[in-house]
Length: 600
Image (tube, rainbow, N blue to C red; front, side, top):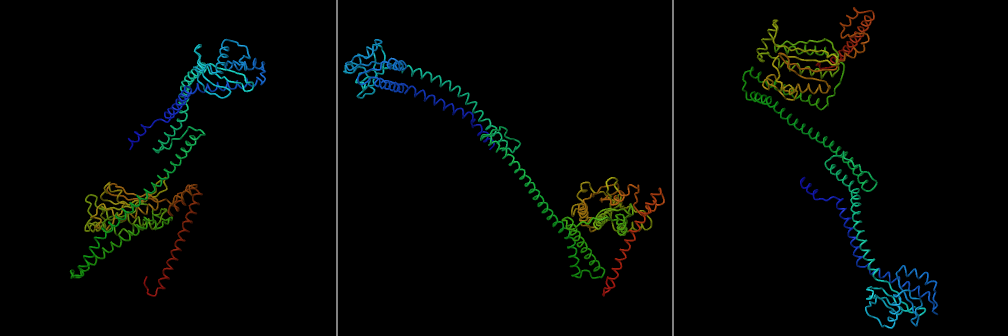
């Protein structure tokens, strides 16, 4: 198609060339027509003009000779002489007796008088071409062999006086005039064509220059180059067309920009729909895969109980434990999926409050320690016992729970990577006897100076996560070691919940391989920094009651007084919290006493 377009443009001729050829052709045609008309009709037209001149002179002569034959000599000597000279007219007038009224000035007039006499009596009709004749006069062309000349003659009778007259004009002057006129017209045509070519070239250039600019502009616009603008100006139709081209270019650019924006949005929506469809298919595939094994186990052991394969009580107890354990795993999976679904779709609102992160971590570590002891791992917290942070306290606890659960499940011997139940029991017994376990889980909390953030990390000794899997552990149902994950009942959803929670906080999180283990971390906004900023003018940075009491023993007088006031403020907060807890306890006891069944 592109090659065809070039061929088509190549066959086109310039408008300037076409216009020049057209105008020059018209000019040549007009000039040729003029030359033809001049050659064909100039002599005839000139003859008609001379006949009119002779007829006009005839009327004047008749008007100035009365019926009685009186001649207005003054007129003929003055006015009529001018007519004769201007028209190169020769004239004779004879009375009824063919006597001349005027003196003959030359031999030519005598010949004319004799010829008039012969014409009147039809004596000399030879070599005469009569052009027109009526009762008063006759027009004729006469060749004079003696002088080798041709004349236009008019002879006849004057109506008023009845006198005879004859006037003639040499035809040679007509032919000479026509020849000169033709030659003049020829040179005029040649000059006119030359000047016309120059003028037509200049005019066509002025006309076609803006058209060529518009052509180039339209070609650039066809290639979506909207920076091209018409700059020719002008108030004529071409200038208005150029202005309309500029407006069209702006509107097209705006429209195409809007279309591209809409297309991008549509593409994003299509990509998002594709992504959601892929996630939905992946989700159904993963859920079906995760539920397939426990359902198969439950079905198998339930059928075993139904078929009475387990005869003794211990076997039946084992079968029931397996069924309950697998049902519990499915229940946990469903609960985690529901939690993750609420987080991802934003239906679980985030309630940002100021809470004590250190206290939360200490409580969580204490409640989880028994699980770590079963794995023979040393779980400890290294950080301040009280540190204020901003966040949703329940969701932060969910993050800690998943991090600690992940650490306990993956804490291994750094060399062998084994995680056998028997070895766990042996290491737990060794820990009770005072032996230092090789498995360590450490929770750390520290402020990141200058950022206003608190970073909490959960470290567990053990094997490293492959580098290519570090960014994939946050995906739903992703498991680095699927066999081991099945051993401890993992579903691959916990870290996805962490990701959804931290992204709802708009805070950072991550994982990295460290020496002899792996470290998961997350960050929260430091709420204690606000208090430190408010007290920066006093130079005080108190974090706990112990720090406040220490400040009352050191520093200058103003610092000690400020410390005492801060202690009092903190004690007021503690007393208020205790009263609120007492009220809650009283309400709980009241509700328990009102329950007729006695169940809690």
